[in-house]
Structure formats: C-alpha cells, structure tokens
Amino acid sequence: MSIVKIEKIVKIKVELLLLSMHLTNMNIRPRRNRKNSAIRAMVEETKLGTENLIYPLFIEDGASVKTEIKSLPNNFRWSLDTLLPEMEKCIELGINSFVLFPAVNDSLKDTVASYSYAHDNFYLDAIRKIKEVFPHISLMSDVAMDPYSSDGHDGLVRDGIILNDETLPVLGQMSLAQAQAGIDVLGPSDMMDGRVGYLREVLDSNDFIDVSIMSYSAKYASAFYGPFRDALNSTPKSGDKKSYQMNPANKREALLEAQLDFDEGADMLMVKPATCYLDIIHMLKENFKIPITAYNVSGEYSMVYAASQNGWLDYDSAMSEMLLSIRRAGADGILTYFAKDFASLVNK
Ligand code: PBG
Image (cartoon, rainbow, N blue to C red; front, side, top):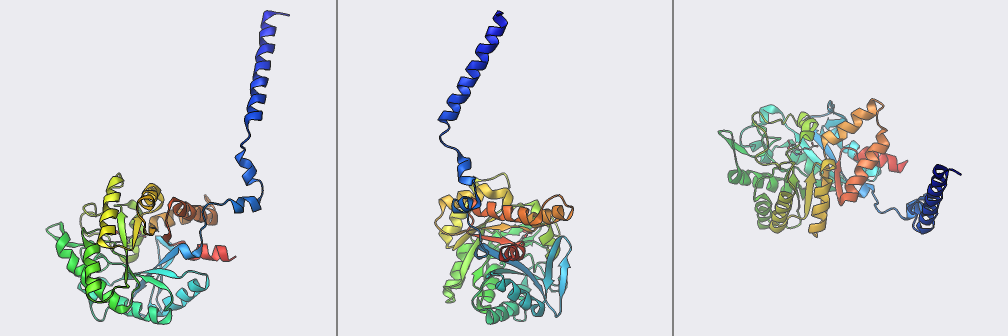
C-alpha cells in the first residue's frame, strides 16, 4: 500500500471516530421538543391573544362616513354612526381596547389647538357616546396638539421653536375635557418634557383619580408614521419633529424618558414604533414594574399589507409573526392596525 493511501484511510477513520464521539455526546437535541404539535404547543413561551391588542380607530365629524385611508388600506375614517357598529363587530371578535384619533377639519385648526377642548368638539361627544354604548371597554385617547394644530406640530410653535412649558396647559385642558367625557386612558403622544406629571396633577385635582395615563415614553422620530399623518392630514407644515421625538440611534435615552414618566405617575409606558425597537421594549420591560405597551405603527402595517398584496409575503403569517415578536420582546399591550384581522384569524 502506498503511503498516500494509508494516510487517506487514517484520515477517514479519524473523521468517523470524531463523528461518533460527537453523536454520543449529543444528549441534548432541541428538535425533540418540536416533534409534534402537542409538544410544540405545550412548550410555547409566548402567548398572544386578542386581550393584548388595542385597536386604533379614526373618527371625523358628520354622518354615514366610511372613507378608506389610501396609505393605510382597510383602515377608515368613520363618523360616529358608522363607527359604533364597527366597534361592536370588533368586540364580538374579542377586542376590548381601542384608541381613538380625531380627524379634524382644517378650518377648525389653529395655532393653539383650541378645538381640542371646545365644548362642541365631535371627538369628545364620540367618547361620551362610545362609553355609554360600550361601558365595559377600555377607551384610550390621543393627547397631543397635532390633530388640532394649524402648524401640524405636537406643541406650540413660535418662530419655528417648540414651546415646551407653554404647551403643558393646552395638553392639560385637552386631557381634562377628555376625562370629563369619560375616557379611561389618556395617551399623551406629544413628547413634551414634564407632561405626565402635569396631567396627573390636573386629573387628581379634578377628582379624576381613576383615569389612567399610558405614556408614549420612548417615541422615536420615525419614518414609519407616514400613513397616520395622511389619515389625519397632520404632517408638520414646517420643520420636523426631531426636537421632541427621539433619535432612533438612542437607547439609554429611552431609559431616562421612561424613568421620568414612571416617576411622574404614568400607569403604563409605551414604545413607538414597535418592530424596529424590540430592544427598547425589552429594556423597559426589564427595568420597570408597570405594564409596557408598544405601538405597531401605520407604516409597519402598510409594509406588510403592500408586500402581501404583491404576493411577496403571506399576510396572516407575517402579521402573526410581527405581533408575536413584539409580545415576545415584552409588550403587554400592542396598539395595532392588525387588531381586527388578527382577531378574525384566531376566531377561525
Ligand atoms: C402624533 C402621533 C403620531 C402617531 C400617533 N400620534 C404621528 C406623529 O408623530 O406625527 C403615529 C401613529 C402611527 O403611525 O400609526 N401625536
């Protein structure tokens, strides 16, 4: 036998020996816990149900309105009369939490968002009526100036500068009006400093101790809000929101924002958007002992929707995976435009 042949045989023998050693040492085989659906279901770590979902709905003044939002397909601007039956359908599917956003006519917008607490405000009427018809649901509001502001910003603007402290009383009046209308949870989405403490004070001193605050704590200046701004026609008229919404590059800053909101009396802390910010959701969950929510925003929905329309993704699977990942990261509640479709899917 040639020396080359011998070398080859020895090499093969050594490889076989290594392989058999490896196999006998492989006493942990994770695939055994995935071998059938009963086992897979038993060891499933994350449960996601309709009780985790909060459905964003858009309302405008008028009657018989159901206008589809172009960049947010299958989502509509409703009037109260068309919204109530839609909510009833959602409730039948198991959704019991909603967040309501007002689409305000441009003619009612001004620089100080005075319509946000006007006594004849249709949004406040809708809150009153919805809670009368569905007293058991959890209804959440939006607290920010942008739906009512002719500047399209979340705070007062003077010479292109956002006035933080002067904005707080506006948010306070808006919140008080919403509390009087019967809102369950206030959702300050404005990112002004000090607003959670300010709003808590306004609520408590007016005997609204049971009204909760779900604070948009870590709200990033994101490209994924586009369709929402189309829905409300609330794109800033000048500049951007980077002086109040957070830099997507920052993580430790989210801890600071969350700590402030926690100290000021927030009942729940929100991260927004969700999918690109799973690390932030996880971090807040590890660091705070109150519920964490995440806003699966308009652009995240539209992306999945558009891709599935093109046949590039399977809508139900992509939706479920996206929501599950947000829940796995640590979100107790998820604000999502998928709420109704997900609920329909699990009811099948
Ligand atoms: C603003 C607000 C925004 C959203 C909710 N409240 C957008 C913005 O900051 O312009 C976005 C929600 C979404 O994209 O689904 N107060």
